[in-house]
Figure 1 (cartoon, helix red, strand yellow):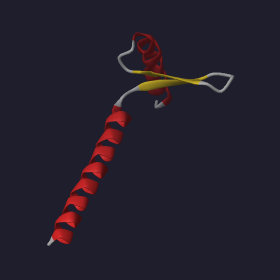
Figure 2 (figure 1 turned 90 degrees about the vertical axis):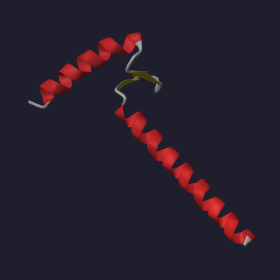
Figure 3 (figure 1 turned 90 degrees about the horizontal axis):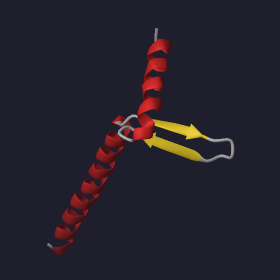
Length: 69
């Protein structure tokens, strides 16, 4: 009986962890962001909602809309 309770708890914990990872990835994927790669190899990521990102994201949306035509 103790083994069964342990295994049930383990399955529930693993299922919760997998669900949290999947939901986190979906949430991150839906946010708009601009990634800027510099010559020295560094990366600057600007996400939707940051003041600096708004101008870049607006231009990126325009470029993508033009490219899809």
